[in-house]
Image (tube, rainbow, N blue to C red; front, side):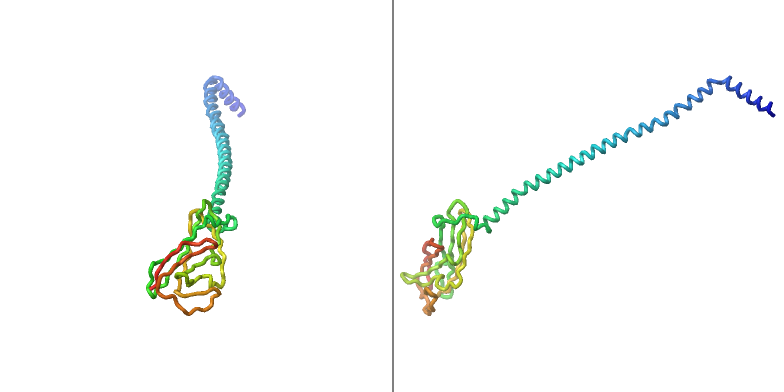
Length: 229
């Protein structure tokens, strides 16, 4: 049995000795594929740093974007501030900053009177208008309340009526009027007479010609003539 084993081993050794190139060729042909196999691994790993760098760049871009957005946002907020201040200033000029605006000098205040008609039938009541205008170049504050208004009607030398005669609760209303702008107050006259102190008067105005004048503070208007039938 041992002899048979020795014979087989001898034949195998002799076979290897006779065909060394084939064995080496087989060995060399097997080796490249196995060494080529790891090659994709580095190749696959090389995009990883690249991707990582790209991600890093992306993160950097993102950070830059955030900073840019933040700066842009802050700039927008900052730029909106003057807008708000402007709106606030505009609102104050038109309504709420009477205390901050300078008082209107009587020299730049113009007061005019008008009636809605020139002639009134027996059943019609005249509508009287007092218009105040800022003739200055800047907005100014003016008291346009009933404490300053007066609607007066006369006929010749006869004082027929005045809104100040029976004014129970005079009001003060400070209003900012823009340069060149006007405000108007209207009063409907009941075709009655009045006296200072609001003493009762039973006599009614007769048909004829009447004159209406308006006054605001110390500034008096033009004369508006109308007729009652």
